[in-house]
Image (cartoon, rainbow over all chains, first blue to last red; front, side, top):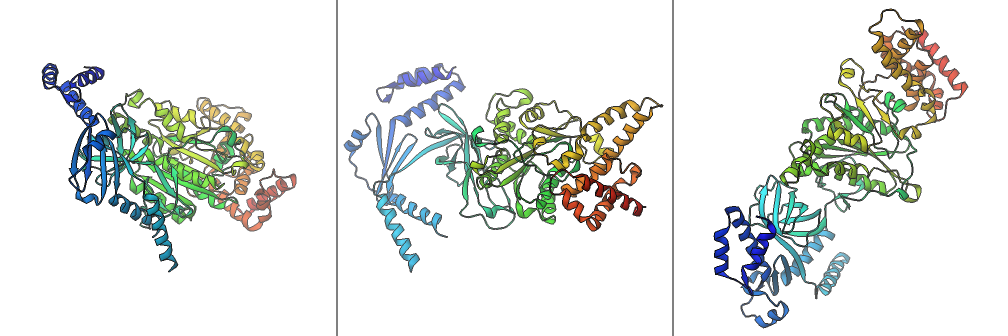
Length: 116
Length: 502
């Protein structure tokens, strides 16, 4: 099956922002093994595009703030104490890091580059 | 104390600038790892040729950009990289750190030392891929690059900025010509920096080359870039680009550089291997469609810059290995068409004792003639023609028993010319000695010397000239056409020497 058709099937498998289980099962039943693999990969990629992971060292986060910044995204919060103040946002294949850890890393690499 | 203050000030500056500085990374996930080629999803912001970094410290460079995946060639071993591992873009293109300290060193494609000496620090990062200088920045080839090999300097002259292919079967002396050329550069008035790029060769062979360069004192102005047969195909593919990038560093400083690519056949094999793993469509001899561009974009970077741009030059001596003298195979024809001439070495000439085993009829230099010095031009004018005539007559004479005196004379002269152009390995000659040897034969002054003793005669004659007639050699080395007076002195020299020679 052509890649474009698989992409179309992936797009059709969603109802608003969530997967439509009925549709997915129906499509999956009709696909060959190799096409099914590509379909699953397509769903995974699509899911990644639609989700946003916010990592912080603490638990409480204001969901509304992020919903404003990233509309139409499924937002998930994770706790990561190693970040040392700040925040890391993973949006599909982009990672935005605004943390003290990052700042310290930058200082270290700057010093390594400029001083023996 | 000053240093401490400086460090703290820099830190403070850095901290100030960090206030609104969020780190942005483009990440991806490994989908497949096949024979050093990684397919990864994500990396939507990646660009061709960009370096990507893996979690385990490995790195790679992007060679394919697909709709939702990228293909990466690994620059390390990378056998531990598995499906699901994360990687990120670095924002940097592939480059190599170069400085003057690189001279005399043996390095790999990534600039890491292979000679046990410390790694180069604070060098300039030179990009491996770069668009070649345009026509406005260039000037025609006008300065000779002397190889010290009589047959080449007289009949197939190479100019600085030229691309001259050395082509032939295995064991015909291709590398020997390149090494002799490197060794000969130590005698130059204007020094030439040499870069020897070994691609897909046995490490023992390269060790021999390095040893020879060291013994001859040629390593001090040379750089050896090594991607041996045991290295990954990706490193073999990148090796010539690393070599030319190093050359470009010295070119920017207005220097003359010689780059030897030993050899581009193995380079094409490495690229074919990568392309097949990347699932690019295979064409003739299973090479990918862009195999011509692979070599043309590399060799186009050899250049003779005009004075406004520093006046430096990069001369390229690519080497191609043929199978059973077949120069009409895919890669040989490609590289022949790209270069400005070729030196064709033949196995049967080599086996019959003619060394360097240059086939004069099929060897050519398309631009080097303009760079030839008047001195050598004056003595080698008819050489090529006479040799070509001799070769055709020699083949014809095998069938006939009776030959007229003119043909006999021509055959005799041809034999003598062939004999005088023989030269042992690692013994490049200065231009004055080359002129002396060739003139001795073309003027008929050596007609009464037995052909069997030519080699000894020539060697002793050179010694004699150095001792007794240094002024003649000095006159011949000034690159000007020899005057009547100089020619008379050469005649005197030869007649005096012949009396002593037994």
